[in-house]
Image (cartoon, rainbow over all chains, first blue to last red; front, side, top):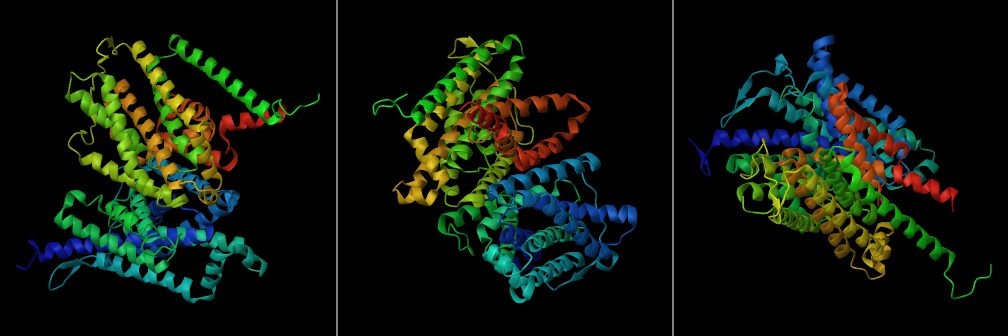
Length: 295
Length: 328
């Protein structure tokens, strides 16, 4: 059997694959954070809770309304995203003129409310969501066994990430968004409805989180606390990559997932902390972040 | 009335009067604290005092230096774990030594984290501190001396200086009160010193403070270390009081709770964190016994949202504004 530094190739590739999938979730979530931060200048602490809401919406939709996976993948981001837009319109807008730290505190409070309510309704332990039939089973590659669903998650996450990049960097709407990031007052003077743009942007960021939640539902136990611990890692990823660049956020997310997977192979005790250690190294060597341009 | 050049200006007089009011308020509060155990359960009061010290330490950073740390749980937990481990493993050790070493451990951790975190500003500062604290959380789950998920139980209270038996709640209460007063005095001194004035300048306008020649990073770091050390002191004391150190103290919820206490009481006021800690701890104690016990985090979250939306100066801040408006 082929070995890589004393580890069988199949095990090595398997862990690398798991790492890459975690990385895809880091990328999706840090992308959403970056999009929201760009225009609203707030760090959305409720992002983890909104990811969790996405997973729960898929689960409950399947249980009570018979909504299948594919429909959920389409509907849940729309519904949760609309809920996010409502939240922006009713709550976040009222503190838009204040120091951005208040945005962090407010969304932190919202995260506590969402998480706490769902714990009371459904308990902490969580439920499992079945893998859709079309994606069950796996493919035998020459060096490893790849469960089809995991392959699909990777492809779907990458497509959505690159699609977002395309919209923001290459379309007219994206140009508005980037201009709004630079100077919202001037945009408004040119006749662009900036408040609407802000609402839609927040809704879109939340929809990305909910989409990640639906993707994650068949992979991880669906529980009310699934988002919060993930979010803190994503914060570290965001500090490493900086929120200035969309592609930077995607690349950093994937890379951190890979590093985490590698650590799991060679030194499993540090797998939980390795991303934080990378963050410390980046802070020491390149304080603005790998892709950051912050002074 | 004619003013001569030698008499104090109105601003000075007003500042002096405010100082005098504050001093009197402190004496009254201390008198209340001294007789409080006659009327209330000492263990509850000790819990309030520990969290009040924790919140005051946090407020030094947010209220007076403008730095929002989302990772103060790490220092509370470090103080608690180190003290708890020492007192359980070395029975000859007196509690005050354990508390001192626990506080020092938090100071060291604060120096390391502070040096890293001040390399970024604003929102990134908050995220860095949160991530570092989460790293400590994972470390404490796996470290051999913390008891993992179970935590450290049955930490002996011991005898203060080898003389006073602290297993008596009343004796313990006065020790905790003394520790709180010392911690509060350190904060009070820091805030009103020239050092504190520079901190406020940095909070208000960092580029200007830099251009005036202040080494802003050094000031921020020292403030961070003092704050971390006092948070560690609170954690160490709490461990001795409850004879327990657990992962709850290291969890990010705890970092959120201390922000809430400070916010409810009034960010940047001296007494705000005290009021906030009292309120939040009482609320938690009351809720734990009521049928709403499971909804604590929802209720805390709602208070968070309400505070940020419409009550940003906090209770003490609002009172100060009222006093300023009506009796100037």
